[in-house]
Length: 198
Image 1 (tube, helix red, strand yellow):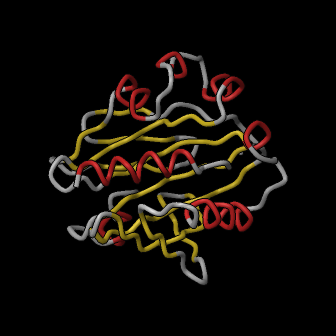
Image 2: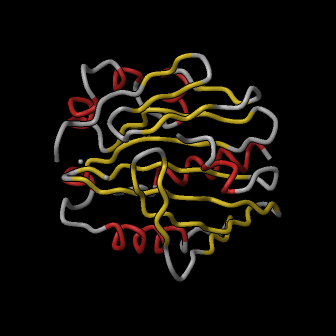
């Protein structure tokens, strides 16, 4: 199961081609169980069995240099990297996980891409993967995480005989795609995951 979740995580990162006018993205902060992101205007409180990744662990998970996290701001980091992940957290028991990050559209795809076009690109890429079946919904909904509204895409995923839900929360602002990705096992519902955000 851990291998499958890791595969989903890697594929999510690989196919996030594509998220902000106003202030540039800034690093969130973690204080005990609470991750606070002032730029996206939400707080996430993890359950006790969940573990936040360190910057070194995030760098290893996405096959990047840890130096990407040492820049003064995410904007500086994004000048040299297609995407930057600000937070990763995983349930050590079920392997349900959540990732928060930003993609530089001008560098990776096109700053003119819409959220809808981005979703279509995701569909196309996942359709080329034989190891898993990702079923995208016909329609997308809006969801608020904290004070921020995202486009929510709830996908049903089958990989290695396992059934899970993968949820993409997407918001484009200026040249960035801001994203929150939740890979949810059957131990949780999407509503339960969203209730962890304030």
